[in-house]
Image (cartoon, rainbow, N blue to C red; front, side, top):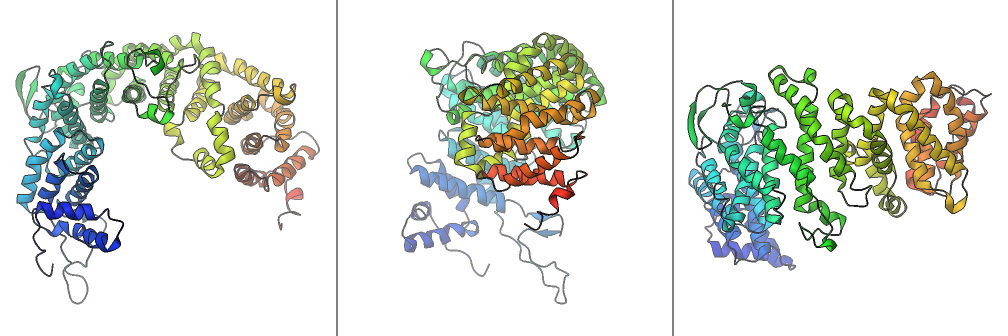
Length: 618
């Protein structure tokens, strides 16, 4: 820096933050320049924290202060290094590069006094913060600092949070307990994706915190507890559980390694040695895991009635967006997510890692079957006319899909296959009123959603497709003929109806199911011979349907069944190519896109060149 920046007090900082919202550029621009220079001002982070934490300050100003605090701590806490170039991220040339050997400009870093002040005061500010936006920004700041300083340079962080969580029996402490849980989750998240060898601090956190979290979660998940505060705290506990277990069970359960210090378990202090980072904790003994599974099952089973009924928990919103964000639905989502993840890692013992085999055997025989009931009850919400979020449906279908391959769970699932296939999966495949409105009113967004690579991770339609295909693959003897009979009946019913009697949405769902089974159907001689007739009678007419999404589905079906062996003199193939070419100029954008994709498949079909070559120049 050329010179030391001018000193600033809290009042001047407050004014600068206020002015940054001014519509007058002559006022706003100097304020923005001042804020941009804050990272060079000694004590600026302390003042930003004071402004962000002061409840009497205007909310927008507090939020702006919290954003600047987060950004400066993330950027200036330690020197960031580019692992590809070996340079600080602020760039500059290396000390020995070039003929002049010029050294690069070192980035601005916070001094130790400022860091110590933030570590001392940030947690207290977070614990007492009622505004969600400011609270979340402060929690992110804790996370970014903990990446570098926890546990070595911030040894009192975990004891402070655990001391606050221990006050959970006092209703007056509910906000502070929730915010302590939020901060604890941020610390756990820092180790969530670490390798087993780098998870020592997380294992220590588990040993020290889970004896507090388990009884609190049991109390919050009691069927007679309905407050939103309880749901918010329970959500944070489940997120902590998720971060601690989704990739590896803490080493206590696998018997690997020893702990890195003293740990409090059930009120007694145990000293454990070793560098592995895990301690022997009853919480993660396979049998002692059952209380956690009881909590998850209780959450999944909890009824969430409509607000109009007046039943607890009261106040469920009516809009889908608000329901998705409602804490009780969030809790259900995390419960289903944890169980689906557990099932995918431990449901089939043969696929589990060696040190998890014992737990996997316990999980597959004793735990997974316990959850089929609550999972199926949750999936029955929509068929019975009740609400369920898309994400919860998606995760529950994922759980059922995993249950298909495992013998103990499939034995329980088998009597309910009709319910799963025809009451849950098939209606999930069908377009909703919102889908159709999007197709007609915002085709660009419709195309984006239909082709999103993330759809597999959140779209219940994709999980229903996966479940159907896996049922046919793994349990075809029980499923294939009845399912194909059902889908064929849907197509026959549509073809034999006229006008308003035709159910366009139902037909689209049937074609989606059949197209999803294309690889299987084409590989089986007894089915492959019937596909040409199905295409001609049930797909060809849809190319000229007045219903846009059926024209779109017809083009998609061509992509799935382009390798059909045509039995005639080539007329059917020529007709198909002509129909696809016509859809390239369809008035609906999604149809045009699917038609262009279909054409790519048809180009590779033998005999297509005679029809395509004359029109390619066009």
